[in-house]
Amino acid sequence: MLRLHFPNRPSADIALNDGLCPIVRHASGQILAGVSAVGMLLLARFCLDRRGLWLQISHDRVHVHVNGRPVKRMAYVRSGDQINIDGQDMHVLGRLPGQASSPGHTALLRGYGGHIHGRAFALDRNWVLGSSEQADVVLQDKTLPALYVRIQPQADKLDLQVLPGGAPVLVNGQPCQQSTLLPGDQIVIHDGIRLVVESPALLAAPVVEQTPTQSEPVAVTAAAATPARPARLGWWWLLLAAVVLGGSLAALLLFGPR
Image (cartoon, rainbow, N blue to C red):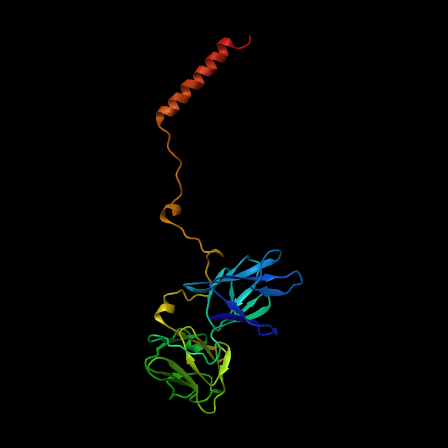
């Protein structure tokens, strides 16, 4: 289950269920989530459907950043993303720490940000990340341990383990020394080093953080996409109109006031 966490508020997380979750500004200036937008200013809303979780911005005056990048209209967000809406920080989190489930098929580990941005690693064998040239994925930050994190596929799961001497990493925003990974999980190893576990199902969804579309998706059919043409009138209608107009003018001349 996805949930919305406010890191600077002592409040319970808000469940993101199927459907819409509005983000509004109260008259007091406080930004609230999951409440009715009646009488409040709608800033944005989360939409959870079969494609995943979408953040839709209501108008151009709302300032939104997802993982530090500005978003104007719509963003596809995942568990672990950090969002700022008009100065209010919020995190999208997934399962609680300790929960596990089978990913179901071979997944990918894809880098976002920094020198590993865009690189993908098939999780069909062990991968060790670290600053040493002996690591499978070499991290350029030499302040990190030589051999830092191991990701190991098992028969029905993916195991992440911080090797001895390493500081905890963030898995979906939670500090972990070890964790069972699922498709969609995000791993933050260091500032600017973020990795996402992806599966074929997730890869089918658009992995973009900004789109030039409208704030609400609109289905356009082929018929609707073609501008309607005005109906053509037959030439006989024009002839008939000319006859009627001519008769009216003749009657006005003959029988009109003198």
